[in-house]
Length: 94
Image (cartoon, rainbow, N blue to C red; front, top):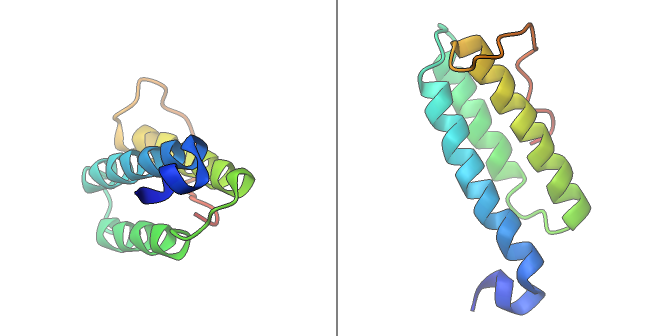
């Protein structure tokens, strides 16, 4: 049942982590103070949809790292992080 039981436990965790990260990014984006908010949210959704079938562990880790970097930048720009910095908002290929 599910990818975890067929491919082993290593693929189940990234799938769970990916869903949690996706929800966290969308929640943060909802609070992003920008006139482009709706467009950015749609771009985030599109990027996750485009990459939902990636199965290679190395590629998954790369995409998750890019998404985490994007989330940190989004939080910084939203004032939701104590580590405010000038980080460009970019999710890369995710």
